Image (cartoon, rainbow over all chains, first blue to last red):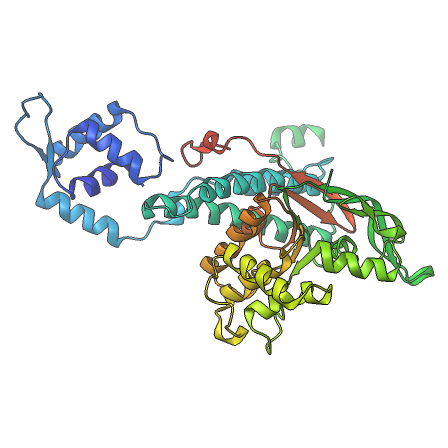
Length: 191
Length: 241
């Protein structure tokens, strides 16, 4: 997700100036995505350049609110209508680490799995404790963002369980080192 | 004093070549106000641990202590009394007797233990009130939703003086919202001065515990917790690892 679409969504509520946008952005992401005011202004100026927002006259306090344009609304609608692609997300370091652990001599893969599981479980406990503090959370957005992180952590634990079960049945093939391209000159001279 | 303590507990089923080592030297203490989750694959010893903790089974070696009473020293009668008075169970299903009302279900362990009907009923209604089921005492189990039935089971597990609740997959058949409400309730009843052991294979449910113990082949291989302040978590997604 981009800050750009976050700001457009907030401006769809009504005109806002930079500081208001920053506060509203952090509130709507449950404080999980802190934004600095510089990011807000650079994003606003790009949006203005692309005619997705337009500045309004300054207020008496000297703040300049922005409003969303029709082009901005169309862009926002298309963002909501488009699923987030898995390919847009960063590579999963954990999956790569485990894949390497399997093929690196001397690495105890089960220990790598268990270390990660404990850490992820702990994260899950901490999210749950945050959630438990709020008996009746008024803010559904906050709760759903927190739930998203909970479900992701849970998925990771389930995947780690799956990895461990697979490891139990796994007998490793001999390790191979990919051979370098044969150097024809050396080969020729050695013959 | 711990409410529950397992000291180097072993449990072997059978003997000789066919012996199965269900638990191999497990030590675990659960304090007042503490909820401990036990996770592990099938056959790792979770259920054996719960049965030993509740006095339903005896260890081959080692000791189980509930509120200062070593279960090994108890005869059958004393053990049965301890199960009635000190330990409550919440199972995945088959928790409540269908022919008894919610209040009668909760009062049952007290009456079995010799309490008068009036006193048992008064304590049962108080326990139902603790789980937000005021006014549901006269309903039969099939007149309650799955979540409400589990709340009755939790009320029964902690009715009267009982302070140790042993829960085996208590959210098994419930949808995620209802399951969460049951765990939230279990958590708050433990916070109010009980101790709990929760066996589950769902990480999201185990996360309601203070500590999560991982069992493998009858041994504790790892424990997660205790926790830091949760506010430290509020970093951008992906920035933590």
